[in-house]
Length: 359
Ligand code: NAP
Ligand code: G4F
Image (cartoon, rainbow, N blue to C red; front, side):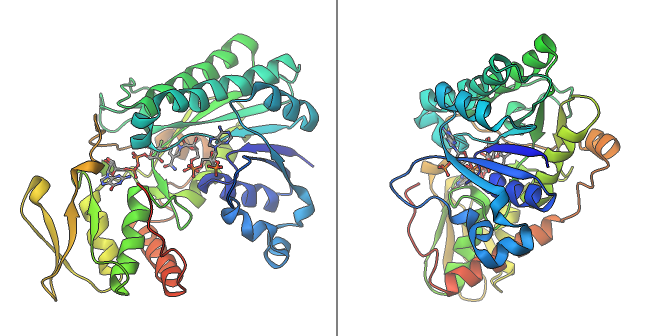
């Protein structure tokens, strides 16, 4: 039985990856942060006896307290578990928040990655343990070519992107210096029903559900023109695994090869709750109006603008299609929006997710 260690297991990707690996018969270890409030919501399907049976007996699932900024803790855990595969998904992953917390973002997203690689090296596990680093399309930032591939030069635009660029290069450096199977998945945006509520897609699908059920009046957003290559997180975790199963340690771009604007996402999400949006005005004055009632339900709030913006991201998934035999369009953009709106409609109906987020 293979052993995997996942940092960031309580996050969107970590929770899907844990389920995926348990279904594949792995013994899965996850790092969980000590928190004063409940932080295991996304792991409930694995923990609940009913679902666990469908996924895989949850006796193969183990949680450990830890933090990637704590090198002692990381080294002890890796030394005790001796995993065959490590998936380093832990991160301060919110781009706008990284402008408020650049130092912390650096500690977690850059130094945290080093702590893991160095632990594997110090413990003499370089031949046994394969390491996956959660790299990001934010590395491309102010894009130098369209679409972006494994050979496109980087130009990060946020403290998050800059910290992640260290994570990318240190992973490659350990691969080249110590002959480690240490690789980067350069993943473009991927979303799901489990997406954090302050990322734009989830903020929109939750608002569409709440507005349709008269539990919210308006949705305030930042840059509506922003373009992203949005995929489905459940499809993307399979790729993380495929990258580690590949015969050679190589970096891969994971993307759909399709780009849509925030404005388009809004239109489609509201369409699923039978609200047609009509846009009026421009820039900060632009408003989304409910065509049937004339009510303004979407407005721009400059507080959601970023000091430096990534205007567009479009990935070229050719390499992952060819070498990993991965299908980037398994879930279409339309299906992704639908599945998220349906899930939030149900949750909002059950009075879940009616809290107001500090954002
Ligand atoms: P997420 O939902 O924000 O999850 C982040 C995870 O990291 C959470 O489990 C969080 O724990 C954990 N974490 C944060 N700081 C930590 C620390 N110091 N030590 C240990 N764990 C820590 O992110 P995601 O969307 O699943 O993304 C997973 C990874 O892929 C991240 O590295 C992200 O930067 C990268 N990525 C994501 C995307 C995307 O579109 N989703 C695209 C490219 C790359 P808590 O639950 O306790 O906060
Ligand atoms: O949903 P977002 O916050 O995601 P962003 O910044 O693209 O970052 C995500 O994807 C990266 C991969 O490219 C990951 F590495 C990263 O960890 C994270 O998962 O914002 C998407 C776009 C931005 O251009 C933003 O300015 O939507 C725009 N936007 C417009 N209004 C908004 C809002 N973003 C947020 N979060 N909230 C708004 O109200």
